[in-house]
Image 1 (cartoon, rainbow, N blue to C red):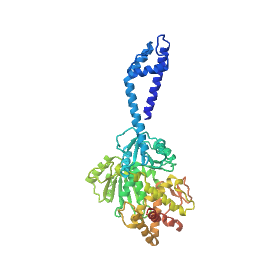
Image 2 (cartoon, rainbow, N blue to C red):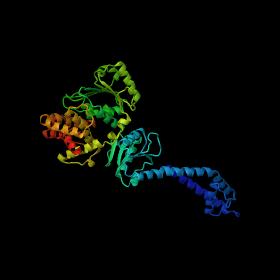
Image 3 (cartoon, rainbow, N blue to C red):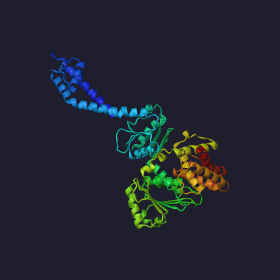
Image 4 (cartoon, rainbow, N blue to C red):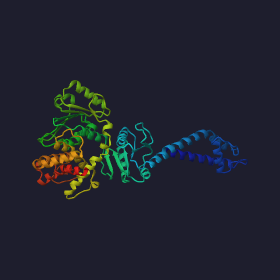
Length: 513
């Protein structure tokens, strides 16, 4: 729309210049009929519309040349004026009229039309068929329908049309993560709930602003819907690029179980440099701590590790390219013997393949907007503040500490599986929370150390993932923390602090009842 307006302004400037030249050329001729700018305007309009009354006409050479320009441009200019007019009506007035009439419906505005944005939009419509989707005018062919309104991505204008920010959410999902961040931050500072697709560590997040990435959404969806079972102790991940790194990171922070149950991870093709970037978690899981998970990065090709493949309880094929995963799957099926299951990451499902990672499954409100897990993370922070010497409200937490609370909320379902002895649990209902909390109270007197150690290990795992390490003096700038030590080295008071995450199950049941 802005492009059309610029074209109109340019055309008007050229038109005024020609009119000025016509007046200058004609006004000096003794027999001229065009003496003023208004005469020139009248003559140009009569000529452009091909009416041609003949009451005014140029008599000079330059004037006749300019008249020929008006005559030759008549059909093109009229067509352009009609076309621009129709575009203005269809691209500016009608969309705004639709939005004004739909103020009582939820609005979801997207900065860019992509396959990911279209997948999320379709999921939003399934959850709320009455919502309105606002997409840029430039159609990419990914999304159409009666819910779609096309107009420039302009959050202040949308806020003005809605007469407020209630019920308006924006999704900044363009190809440039920092541009997404800038747009989302500007919208959030206006009080608009904003979601930014960016796999980056921002130092500042405005209230109402949230970061997400497709790979993060995929990893959350995978480990929620495919939890490790009791008999799965050896996990092989083949392909550790951007997708594989996200899956491995989520696995190491989520699959933290009771003492005595450990997981052995084997990683092949670490093209993203996970081992280099996460030195502390690699060191912590190098096998030197009895009973702890073990993490191995193999320098050889997976095809040379038949013994590892033969012991695997689960194999995850997570190359970034679908074809590479399918090719690897064919080799595994044809030439290798593995008693475990094989999970294949594919962006599009293929018949006969147990796959995960389709956009329609992972780019959803649950894994992008994360309202449920965020709500639980806020509650977890409130519980912690009740006994904290220096309580901090959620809005004042740094992005890192928010992520720490979100990671703790993510782990609640693992705690519930343990307490309820239901390894297939994928949804945490209010009733599940209530029953899990009752079981926690029954076990706490006899198994307090088991439960608290489980939470302490999970907490340490999160900090180690971001390369925090032990030091007697805490130093946030250097990422030093005095409590990154084995559970049995904690003081009694420090051990009891790890019970607060379990207490949340009861609070959550009361809150959601």
